[in-house]
Image 1 (cartoon, one colour):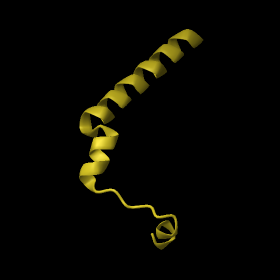
Image 2 (image 1 turned 60 degrees about the vertical axis):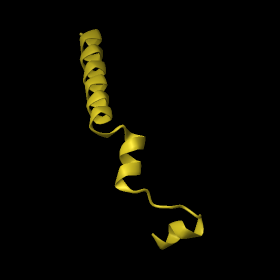
Image 3 (image 1 turned 180 degrees about the vertical axis):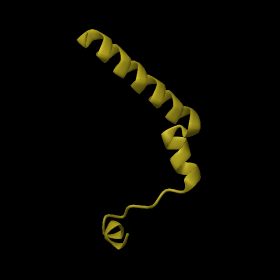
Length: 46
């Protein structure tokens, strides 16, 4: 962490991380989209 201080980077709080990441719903959406892409890719390869 002390190396980050040289670049004036601040560590985010949990609340800030959730607002950036989208929280639970953002993770669920990313999983569903990823699964759909994998299924479509598999179907096109057959």
